[in-house]
Amino acid sequence: MPRNEIGELRRSAAVATFGPGAIIDFRAGDATISAIAAGLEEWDRNFPPGGVLHAQAVREERLQKKLGVKGFRLPPVRDPGKPKDVERALPAVRFPQWLQCPKCDRVNRADEWADEPGRAGCYCPTCTAKSPGKRKVYVVPVRFVLACEAGHLDEFPWHWWVGHKEGCQNRSFLTLKAEQAGLAGLILECPKCHGRKSMDGIFSGETWERFSKCSGRRPWLSGANEQCTLRPRAVQRGASNLYFPVIESALSIPPWSDRLQEALGVYWEPIAEVEEGRAIFIAGLAKTVLAGVLTELNMSAEELAAEVERRLAAEALIETSNLRIEEYRQFTGGTYVQGLDREFEIRPRKVPDALRPWFSKLVKVTRLREVRAMTGFTRIHPPGDGATNVARLSVSTTLDWLPAIEVRGEGIFIEIDPDRLAAWESIGDVQKRAALIDTNRQREWKERYGAESEPPSAISPRHLLIHTFAHALMRQLTLECGYSSTALRERLYVSTEKPGMSGVLIYTATTDDDGTLGGLQRQGDPERIERTIISALKSQMWCSSDPLCIEDMMKPEDGLSLAACHSCSFAPETSCEEFNRFLDRATLVGTPASAQTGFFKGLLESEGS
Image (cartoon, rainbow, N blue to C red; front, side):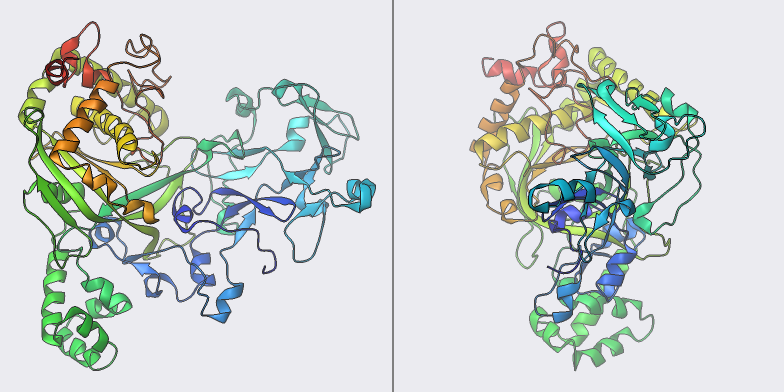
C-alpha cells in the first residue's frame, strides 16, 4: 500500500455520495480516519492530462451545452499497465482535525497526538504506553463539526464551548466524557481550570446566535476560504444532511447516442475547434491517427467530415431550458429506435385494454445511457431547482469540465392519458391538496432563499400523481423483476406548459451489471405490465399506518408530502428525484372522505377493489 493511503471508493461514489467536499470515513489498518475529498484541481494534478483531454473523459452534448462545459471526466482510476499509476491516488484532507482518545477521553488537534511516518493514523502515547504489549491506542475523529447553508465547514469550537474560567490559558487538551446517556450527560471539561459544560443544546439554532459569523472555510479546496455572513450550526460528522450532491443528468438520445464521438474520443475536440478547412484537417488525420476510427465506423474521410458538420449544426440548435422535452418526444414518438445506435433502443408496445382509459403510451426501453454530472453540493438542506447556495467543487471558475459518471441500463416508459389527466386536475379536492403542498414549499423556499425569491415551478396535481405513481410502480417492480429497490430509479416527465408532459421512466441505470440483466424491460410486455400496475395500485389502497397515513396525520413536519410514509410510498433516496418529497397516495386511490381525489378510482373499482 502506498504511503498515507487510507482506503478505496467505488468509482460511482466519487461523483455522488463521496464527491469533492464530502466527509468520508476510512479504515487504515487499526486506525479510523475521517477525511474530506479534495477538489477537482487535484484530479488534474494527480491524474494528467487534465480535463477532457484525459482518456477517461466522456461526452454528452445536450448536457454539456446546458452546463456550459466542453465535456465530463470520470473519476480517475489507476491503470495497472502504467507503472507511474501505482503511486497515484485522489487526495483527501483530514477533517475534522480534532481527535479523541477512546481510553482517556481527551480531545485535541491532530498535531498534538503521536503518529508514525508514512501512516495516516494518530495514537495516544500515554494510553499506548499503558496498554498490554504497548499496543497502539488510536485516536478517533470527534463527533461534531460546524457547517453553514453555504456549504462551509469548520472545526467545532471546543474551547469556546467549554467556557474556561477567567485566567485559564489552556488551549490544548480537553476531556469529553459520557457520564450518562444523551447529550446532557456528555460533559466537556478543561483539566486545568475545571471549567465544564454539557453538550446539551448543541443543535439548537439559538445557541449559535451568540457565536461569531461563519468562518467561510472550505477545507476541500486547499484553504481557499471566502467571506460568509451566515451563522454556522453544529452537526454530527456523519449526519445525512451534511452533504447533498447537486446532480444534472441527461439520457443519450438520437442523434447524440450513436458511436461517432465515442470512436473519435480525444480527437473530437480538436476537430470541432477547427473553424475553416475542417474537411482538410480530417483528411490529414485519416492517414494517421484516425485510420482505425474510420475502419470502425465504416466511413470514408469525406463521410466523416460531413457527419461532423451535421452534428455541429445540430448541436447549435439544442434547447437547454429543459432537456427532458426532447427525451419525452423520443419516448412518445411511436417509432422503434434500434440498429446501429449503441446507446438508445426503444420498442413501443400496445397499452393493454384494461389500462387504456388511464394510460396512452407504453414503451419498453431495452437500452439506454445516462450521464450524471455533479455541479456542486449543498449542506443542511437538499438542493432544489434553482438553488443559489450551491458550494463549488473547484477553486477555479474557468474549468471547462465537470465530474460525471455514465451508466447504462434498461427501463419502462409510461405516459398517463393527457385528456383524462386534465379532467382530473380540475377537481376541487385535488387542487386543494396540491395547493397545500405548494404553499408549504413556497414558505420553505422563502425561508431558505429570501422573501423575494420564488420557486422555479409550482407543485401541480399531475406532479403529485405521477411522482407517487412512480414510487408505487418501483415498489411493485422490485417484487416482480428481481431487482433490489436501490437499483431502480425514476425519471419524471411532468409539465403543465404546452406541449405538456405526463410520463415517467422507471429504469435501472447502474454502474454495474445490475442495470443490464433484462428483467425490467421484459416487465414492459402488455400482459405483464397490466398485472404489475394493478397490483401496485392495490397496494396503495391500504397502509399499515392507516388511518393515520391516509388522513395526512403522518405527513412530515415540512408539509411537503401528505398521505405518504415509509410503509407505503417512500423509496430509497438514491431512487427518488425529489428526496421523498411531493408524494400523496390519495391522488392514486382517493381518501375516505373524497374518493374522486383518486385518479385511478375507476380502474380499481373495475378490478373489484
